[in-house]
Length: 577
Image 1 (tube, rainbow, N blue to C red):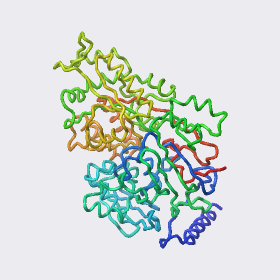
Image 2 (cartoon, helix red, strand yellow; image 1 turned 60 degrees about the horizontal axis):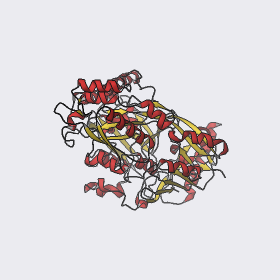
Image 3 (tube, one colour; image 1 turned 90 degrees about the horizontal axis):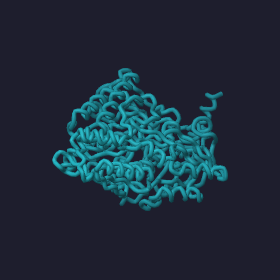
Image 4 (cartoon, one colour; image 1 turned 180 degrees about the vertical axis):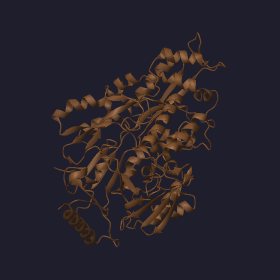
């Protein structure tokens, strides 16, 4: 019966695609989603608008290969797609723009068979030429794609070739365990961006000055309008290639609206007043949601630990940090001492009402397989911090000012963005504890996009409080942890590792990529975590417990199990009124 039902569904979908007659492109390989039994709980109805909180600021770019922050990727992940995606419940790699893939027995070749008849938003057919172009872009160092590091194998790119209009083959220098987690980079259209890339202008394309309706992807959603840092509207892609298991073309909703409020308190009030259909609950406001839920028309759903990490980072870039700051920041003894001045328990209590977790490792606690639980830690203890500073030659004078060996008073600036209470609490506590140690820290709040510009472009900063979203497979952090990575924040894009410990991380990282046995990979990632714990390039803070408040009229709006995201369900969410 299941086989007969599947054949019926496929036939129905093909018939619908053919009879719609909305384009000269015929969809031959639809993606049928078993909404009823796998991803949601019911077949949906069409129509309606869903409004969500976009956070403190909107996208910094509309170019998926230039996007480096969640304010951009949260939007662009709905507009662009990769060859493969992850099952939102299991993390299993699934075909997306590819209808199938094959991996050779020796693990060095991956062949993708593309879905035939998928359309770009402007009606042009998606083909192998777009895939080839995308990887040309991703591997172009002048573009600075955030996919670049994750797509290198022993520092070398894969070879890729067009077999025919709907087939692409990748040849790897060697077997590479995490390749299927990184090969799903966003595919971009050669017919729109090809000439710009040839002329060396790709990195300039699709900035915020671009008419958002000109941004063309293959995803379920198209950008309709964007008022910078205020509101962004997505509209349904009427020619999308996904169908539910009753033959209805997805998505069900007509529109999704992102609204941006610089202040988190304002966003919470907006949810309580009915403006948002669902919202990730800030830990600092969790008691308010619990108190209101019994009298509300929304429900709190638990979604496990936040999949990301939050931290303070010191700038160790020798080309942009002047002395004597550079000597302080690159001194591991200095960093180890300061690590003892991160009051994680108080941060957890003040910022999250205790509903969260102490973060010590660069690997998120949601990823239990690779997380090493017995790494070196730095318990909060100002006496220990003082002792270690003294032993390292940073002495506290009778005037209460701490100086280095050359008599320079130790002082620096700490930055973060407004609108995220936890970061402000981290900054204020750190500033107070530094003052207790005789170190002057100027703590300032500046626009998030300005911070991203400092991290990615000007490199003009001392210390920053920020976070990373995290990835299902550790190799997704290549851009951060490899010394050549564009998000190797403390000293990005090194031609050669600047320190022995960074070189060791590179070595271990590449060895983990080569290890096809998961147990062997785990041991390499254990070693990497030990190195990070010893040399503390980042001062990790705390990790929130993810909870989402979802209005009762939303159906199928469940957080996924790999990251706690509701956004991964947008294609089959519907409104029941």
